[in-house]
Amino acid sequence: MAQDASSTSTLVTSTGAVACERCIVADTSLTRMRGLLGRSALPREEGILLRPASSVHTWFMRFPIDVVFLDRELAVLRVVPRLGPWRAVARRRAAAVLELAAGESERRGIRPGDRLAWAGR
Image (cartoon, rainbow, N blue to C red; front, side, top):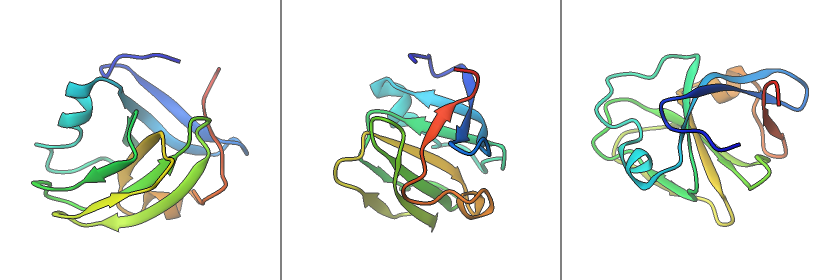
């Protein structure tokens, strides 16, 4: 399941619904630190999976995001919708964080207890 940050894959729920069409994996300290900084927006079909991560901040960001905390098996532990700029949030025992455009977790029906997986794997 290792990928570099320049590659993208699709994340789906256990029911087969698409959770993120173009998920960028940030699994190095540099790519996790960069995250979404410097962007002016996040397209609805795009997201970033930070791993390992149990917390995120939106300092210096220009837009709100949805934050989905995941365990090692990509089960959803917590969803924080529409986290605005200059905020921080964490979840104990989270192994990864999926950042989506604001409103996407609700639109896609992502809830605690859901399990995500890479499409085609």
